[in-house]
Amino acid sequence: MAEAKPTTYAGIMSSLKAGHYAPVYYLMGDEGYYIDKISDYIAANALPEEQRDFNQTIFFGSDVTAAQVADTARRYPMMAERQVVIVKEAQNIKQTEALERYMQKPNPQTVLVICHKNGKIDGRKLNYVKAVKQAAIIFESKKLGDRELPHFIQDYMQQHSVSIDAKSVQMIADATGADLARLTTEMDKLMTSLTKDDRRVTPAMVEQQVGVSKDFNAFELKDAIIRRDVFKANQIISYFEKNPKAGSVYSLMPLLFGYFQNLLAAYYAPNNKSQESVAAHLGLRSPYAARDYMTGMQNYRGPKVLQIIHKMREVDAKSKGLDNPSTPAEQLMQELVYFILH
Image (cartoon, rainbow, N blue to C red; front, side, top):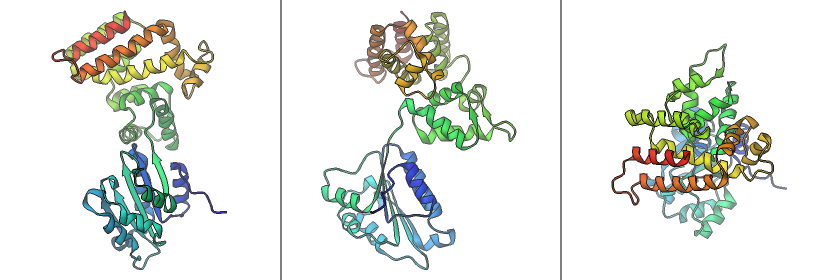
């Protein structure tokens, strides 16, 4: 029986690290981080450095045709076990017939890596899809959801022998969002500040290194809203008016929308009185992470949460200029926070 092709990031990386290289990799999807990690590993490890000048070719889709890629892939390596051909931004190659023909009989001494970012292979090209499925290891790199970011952060830190508490994890996730390239850059920056004897990341470090202010930032405002602390929320809003760079409706909106969306889901947990049940229902890594939702359910009834989500969509549209000829962003933020708290 033929061995199953690895189709997950972990499976592909495990196979590559074991020295197993397939003739064709088709890497596609909206999350460029994993696509880059796989293609960069192949570029750095499939050939010894002294063999790369003659046996490694990197193309960009906007500068090359499918025929040029196929012709290069058909060549045989020069005094090497294999050659590597990497096509970055392959979604920009419009005519794929030559690649389709190549994949019907790929060169076993070539490792062809096709990096198709910001989307997937065009399903209307039936013959091309069939050829890719037949020849390639296919990997779809999907964007992580907000619920998955804490797990990613904890795993990344653990891989580097760094410990991190739940609050620091959430602060990093909230500050960077789901852009994994930026997220890992910020975590790398944090780790360079650690000493050999103390490999712990704390909230104070996140505030300093990631640029999160402790007292007056979108995260503190979110916390005040969760606790329905009207005085603190108004205090922070006033600070934002005087210091627009510290926080705005654009930084606040994703934080609050993600929170209230999860809060609505928390009401449907099998036992929404149990922190453990709510954490499991929301896919959170630990019961500790459900604390804010337990507090939120005490302070906001279900119908109010629905109204808040509707209001956020309205304010988000206005902040982008839809049905809003003149209201400034600062006023939109004040309007949203007032609606939430009252």
